[in-house]
Length: 76
Ligand code: SF4
Image (cartoon, rainbow, N blue to C red):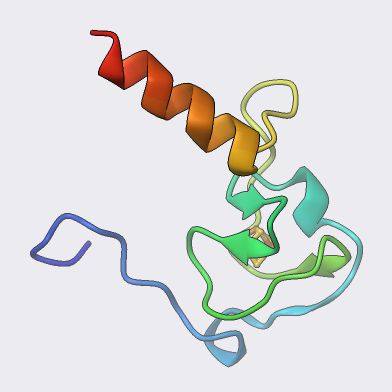
């Protein structure tokens, strides 16, 4: 965790990123092709050493998800 509170993302080579069709089920995957922990474009067909199962049924963190979170926070 960086001083600003944001996670410091790792490079693909640091985490042995490879093609294994598992990112889509990972807790850190965003359907926009991003990962909370790893830099660069991330394919749903990938896998790395940081893989963790989704904690809940898939919550697709796409544009609609962030809009819902924004609206929820704005209405507090
Ligand atoms: S498996 Fe690794 S690269 Fe893929 S979404 Fe999870 S943490 Fe990111």
